[in-house]
Structures are given as C-alpha cells and as structure tokens.
Length: 158
Image 1: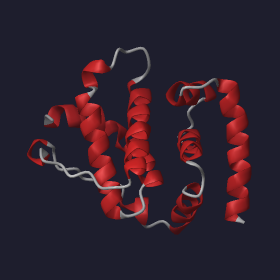
Image 2: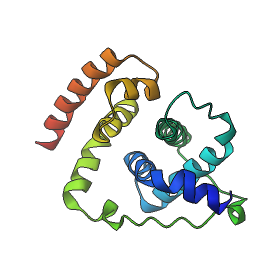
Image 3: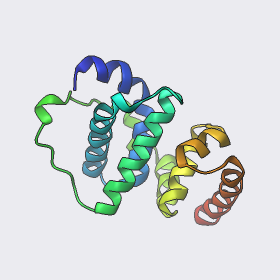
Image 4: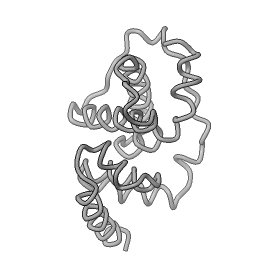
C-alpha cells in the first residue's frame, strides 16, 4: 500500500475505522489487527469503488464487513505482506482511556453484531438513509432498529 493512498484515502477517515474496529474487538491487539485488516481491504478494493456513494460510506461498509468477518472467524489474521503496509499511528489516545467511553463501548459490545454496526453509524450522525445504504436495508427499518437499540442500551447502562 502506498503511503500516499493511506495518507489521502484512509487517514482522514481513521476515526470511522477506529470506532468500528473498537466496537468489534476485545483487546488492543485485536483492535490493531482489525484496523490493519480494514486498511488492507480498503486498499485491495479501491478499484471497485464506483463513486455511487460517498467515500466515507465505502469506508464504513468495508470496515463493518471486515470486522464482522474477523469476528466470525474468531481468530487473528497474520499478515505476510506487512512490509508493504505503512506504520499505523493512532493519534486518538483517548480511544481506550476515557472511562465513560469505555462504559459505552462495553454496553455496545453486548448488542448483536448488526445492532453494533447500526448504533456506531448513528453515533457518527449518519442519516437513516446513509445507514440503510451501508447496512443494505431501508431507512424505515433503520429508524425502528435505532429506537430499539437505544432502549436496549438504556437498560444495559442502568
């Protein structure tokens, strides 16, 4: 992966990737593996981007798909081509140190896999239509799902 592609096409969206990966990983090591795999898959699939949606929507979709796939495999991915990947520096050190955020992520991790993805997109202030496009459903379904997810989170957090 060229460092230019990483700097221009991935780094500006690293917050998205960090949040999605954090929602699906249980340790710093898993998080780093998920993050690296998402970046690799974005790079591999860059030629498949047709411009029918925003680049950020594409990033969300790939991030969710990779994290769900890795979660299902339930094993760490070993990279043999790490020499070609740029060093990933995650500048947001608050990701794992803010207690209220940790509490929220802990509650989110208790949701179903799909609900985790939906609430993460909602917390990113994506519209119902954008979430529906990423998840592959309709906007009305997303509205109902978000209401139910909020109720579940309230119960978990109380």
